[in-house]
Image (tube, rainbow, N blue to C red):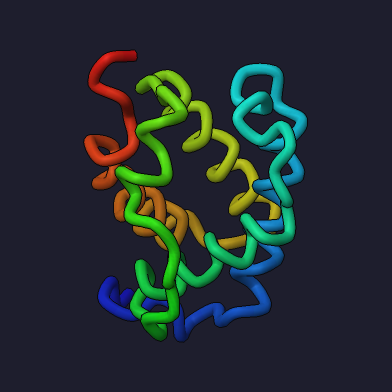
Length: 121
């Protein structure tokens, strides 16, 4: 599998479905759901979609804040990051993506751990 551009293998529609499923779970999750209180789910999905397209080799459309600016004020701990990882894996599996694809996507996201977790949390 071409790890540089796996976006072309599934495209925007599938990515959106995966992210919708993920955010549905995240918003109601007992461990990380509070991060999403008073947040616009559709807006988050669109921002994450743009970010994920680029992450997976698609078009560079993300125009939001840096990962540090967006996440550090939230005081995200490693355990929160890992819970997000579990929910994303479950969403990707539920959407029927191959294990190879899931592993690539998650490994790419895991590289951002140091930019997302708070040093003081």
